[in-house]
Image 1 (tube, one colour):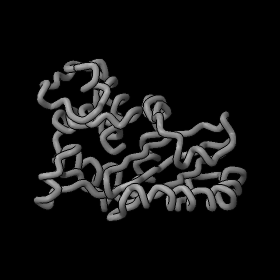
Image 2 (cartoon, rainbow, N blue to C red):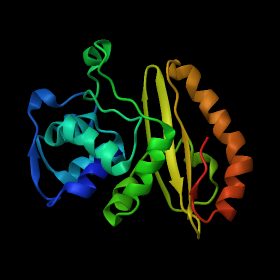
Image 3 (cartoon, helix red, strand yellow):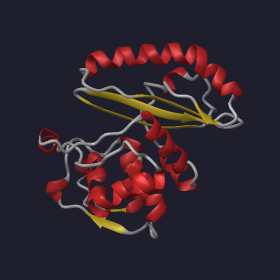
Image 4 (cartoon, rainbow, N blue to C red):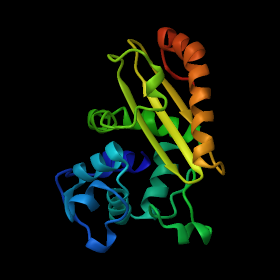
Length: 212
């Protein structure tokens, strides 16, 4: 999401094409499966946010550069506890101490920034995972923007719901917990929250608020 924010602020031509070497197509991403080696900035952002495409994310990392991304995150977004230091699935870098970190409050700031752009709303709305936070909001007409992610020991989800007035940010981040154990605990917590505070928030909010 921070990468999306960076391009919304800095990119002049979303049709600009970026070439990706075949060796950099990783995992089970759309780009890997379809052997896509050239895509526009907008397409890469859509792959990244819509389907958590790691090949697209890494292509954007390489294009923007970590120094520029981190400076933007701190100086423009105001996210003081977020660091982007390695590419997706680069576990060797993580073992060496170079990793990606963020907090819920920093993500809230980022979502506020992204949702200030119509293109940001368009791309965020394409996120495909609705089995976590979104599954407990029983209004299919309520605008929803979200991003989930997971690794073996990480299972996360953040979302923004937009009722008639204001917006509600909801997020859960886990760390150091096996995904198979984290998933049911996360879902139970979201369910308890959604049946109480989230329902109230969606009917009463006038500003960007709420997180778990």
